[in-house]
Length: 244
Image (cartoon, rainbow, N blue to C red; front, side):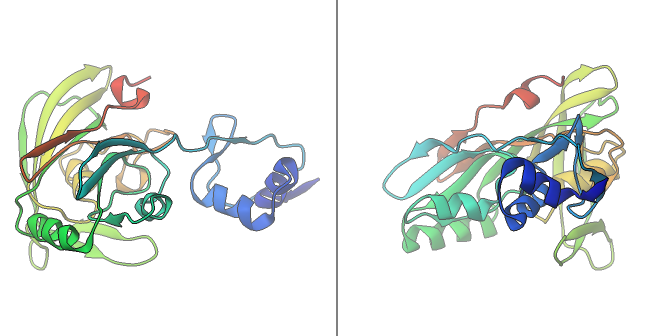
């Protein structure tokens, strides 16, 4: 006997079908070591599921105007905002990206911070595991055009793309994977992911941009942000500290 995956999951966990679909769509449900991607996929009725819930949100800095958290993977930035009373998102991270997420505690500071991002006065650093061996520092200067939609996708486009600059430095090599440190001088949608794929080193687990490696998530972490003279660092989660 077979049935739709979300129905089987709902029965196994004794939750609603809507909640089961949500868990699958958020990338939190596994069958064995494989992430379940299609809520309506037909599966045997005796399929055993594993749900891996996001880690807890941890505050890493706070003053009278600014709150910074270490966002766990698999949480939308808007979910973080909604979970903290009075907090206002200054910027966003992709759902699967962990690390420094900044929130304002009042409208005046929010406008000031957004303006600082717009004027490129905020320094943003990431750490990632990528495909292949990275031996030397790279400066990637390739304009990006983003096609917005339910699942936005960005492409290199020298004609209509917006300026995008990324600096990549080697950190560690493990087999045929490399850990790299990244600084972005601009903030385009999926910039880090697209630029690394563009130079032949897609981020591990980033199937959208060409990684052939199955992973629980895209192995990208927002490691540090420098804003208004304040350096805010998010400790790396276990999957970033060491690749398997």
